[in-house]
Image (cartoon, rainbow over all chains, first blue to last red):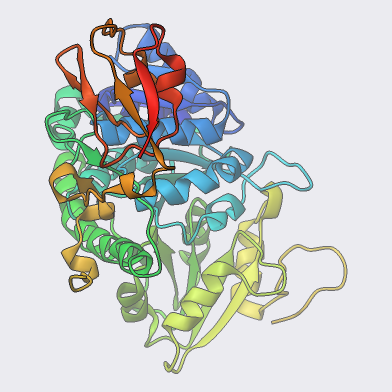
Length: 379
Length: 92
């Protein structure tokens, strides 16, 4: 295994070269651009046999991805923010048609105002679309989880689009040492691509994406619920398999210093790195990182948090008219437990959240909207 | 009508294979006219097969082989596109 200095975007592009998808329909958008730019160069240099389809929009990218994935071709795409918003209509259809597409997402704030920096509002936009969303903490994990996502998406009991969500700029554009597996190890880990009803199997023609009336719509939607449940179980199986190859574990949640803790911080993505640094210096405070946001690992979250005194949920997305999406889910999961849960929104549009602010939140509480100038709301 | 299936009895994503598809005889909606062919003037150009919106033109290999009146709606497109006038519409 060799370590190279790579950004998260480049690390994902190297994973894609090694996975060697048949088709990559894609449209560029900041901060996803380094993924597709690096990958296009790797393909042009003969590193992968992939057909890159330069489509005219993200709506078309996702539409082409559905066609190729269901035709029987391993398919990956990548986007961010407005690109995901434009895809959203088709993302629901990809999930419903059970197209095992892997998508690398560079999380970026949604417009408006227009902004190019990180928050998780794009992921939250398609929260209930039926796609798996796996958040990563750093470039190494972005690489590792691309491999995991390929296996997860293509399992016969899952067959769902899987998003690998990395924080825009903080991960996509920040270089750090990343260990790459040998090409052979990746190919043997991901295996051959297979879907149950390939469209190009002309000996067995099928109608896919049929119309469903009130008598069947509910049942067909429920298949996605079952597929999500299967995805959560599959993550528990695939994590150790990935660890056997990489030496690094990826589980639905990461527990950090929770054994002796009375308080836990809960968050997604790269902020977990900052929180780890903060709680290393505090007694009785740990971190629960949600790695799999969809499927939401309710049992694991409850097990990790139910005995604590206080849980502090950090949401990198706001929900005008409601509370942060991660907060509401953690609070619902802990309903009936004797735990105080408070939620804070932070980091919108790339606003930094420094360690000192996290320490202050933990020790003295703070505003519901961390770092907001003006009248806020103390929690 | 057979019993409605439960979610776990349905194929993944509601995929329908050809053998399972109902083939309703939608020719019952026909407009009152149906196509007839004079095979002595048909040149097997298959324009009728290309244009038919209901896949009601039967082929044998690459030769015209008649109409599937179970699905023909009587739209007259075949009669209009036929370059030799071999197809004409007749009252039912």
